[in-house]
Image (cartoon, rainbow, N blue to C red; front, side, top):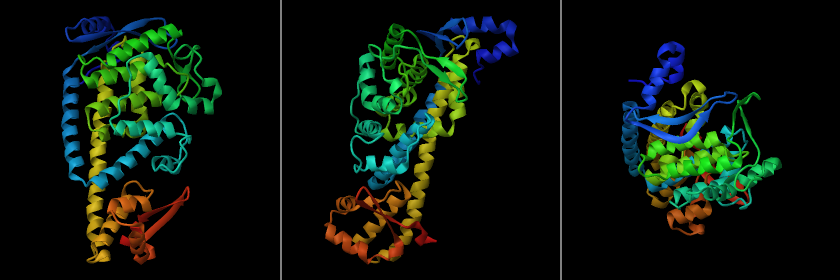
Length: 400
C-alpha cells in the first residue's frame, strides 16, 4: 500500500490529520531522531521520525535483487570493458553532480584529469581523485565534524572559493553566518541551520547515525542525505559533498560501480529529487521522514536498474560490432585485439586509448603496435591529441 504523506492528509482529511500524525509518531516501528525540522518562514519545528513500513521493506528487497542482477552483468563482461565503463561512469558522475549545482564542466577537461594528462591542480582534479579513492576501496573517515571538514577541504573547498572567495569557511569548523538556498528563481526556500554551535551539534548527531550499524545501511544513508542538506554546513558545495558521501557508503556495501551513477540519475530526475526535500521540509509534514526515505530508496533502485540497462546495452553493442571486425583483422590475433580495444574505447569512454594504454593492454612494444595502426585503413581510425598525448579509437562510421 502506498504511503500517504501527512501533508496530503491535511488537505484531504483535516479532521483526522492530528490523530494520524500521533498514530505514526507513537507507532511501535517508528524511529525518532534528535533533529527537528522547521520549514523556512514557519514558526513550528517538529522532531524528525521514520515509520518503518512494508513499502520500505519491499523497496529494499527490490534493491538487493537488482544488485544481484547488476553483479551478474558485471561479472559477465570482459575486464577491459568494465574498466572502460567505469571510466565513463566517473566522467558522467562528476559532470552530472557539477550540473546539478549549476557548475559548467566539459568532458574534455574531466577526461584529461582521469587520464592523468592534466596537472594535479586542475579544476575538478580533487573531486575526480576522491572518486578514484572510492573505486580503490580507500577508507575515508566520516565520523566527526572535523573529519567532514577535512574531507571538504580536499574535495571542494578550494574550487568553491576560487569561484566565489566570499564562500570561504570562516567558523571553527563550518560556516559562521547564515546561508539561503533558493529555488533557482531567486526565491529562498530554505535556510541552513544556525548558529555554528548548532551546526556542529546536529552534524555530529547525523554522522553518528550514518555510522550506526544497528540501523540498516540504506535507511541511514537516506536519512543522512536529507539531514546533511537540511543542516547545510558549508556556504557552497553541500550538494556534491552530500552525494559523494552517499556514494562512498554505498560503495562500501555494494560493488563500487553500483554507487558511481547516482548523480547521473538524479540529474535526469531533478524535479523528483528536489520535491523529496520540499516535502520533507513542509510544516504540514511534521518531521515525517518516511516519504523522503521511500522516495530516495526508489531513486537508488532506479539508479541500479539504469546502470544494469546501460551496461547491457553497451555489452550488446560490443558483441554486435565485435562480430564485424573479424573480417578486418583476418588471422592476425594482435590486430584483432587492437581493433577490439579501439572498439571498446569508442563505445564506452569515448576519449580513445593512448599508445601507453595499448602497449599495456596487449603486452606488445610501441613499435609493434604502431606498425599495426599504420597498416589499418585510415578511415577506420579516429586519432585526437590532448595535452601532447595521442588517443586512438575506432571510427564507428566504418560499420555503416
